Image (cartoon, rainbow, N blue to C red; front, top):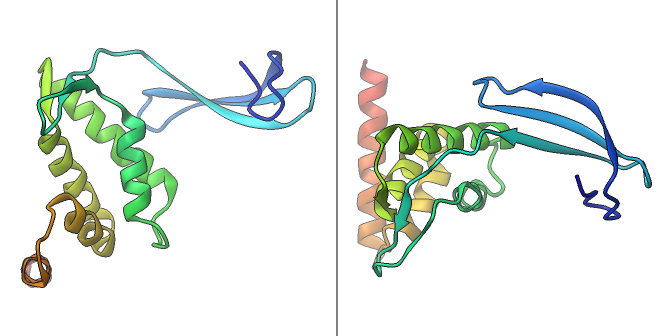
Length: 157
């Protein structure tokens, strides 16, 4: 494994453990040259569907893009990276289990919005405002009204 700090190719594994879901192995490594420590994740390479973009282009599924979108939406919010990585893993698993060879980017976007709705309402609204391309303040306010309605329903249960 190439050291992200100095580029040296030799390291030693200091610690290994399985993720909560058992779908990855987390390894703490130490570079044998600069002695810096870094973390790697080992996952089974699975066949994921191609993502069909709005303009019709197809590209391979990229979990990093989803994670970056979640990180951006949750910027300066009290949501930890572990929760975001778990959300990405759940989305990825759902896509794999669908058995589809291609999936619309809009389906992935809705899954991301669903995950954010559970994690943080402010992050959800941030993401929704960009993802749904709100044209004006009225569309934004309508999304907030729906969110408040759902919150009231949850409290009444």
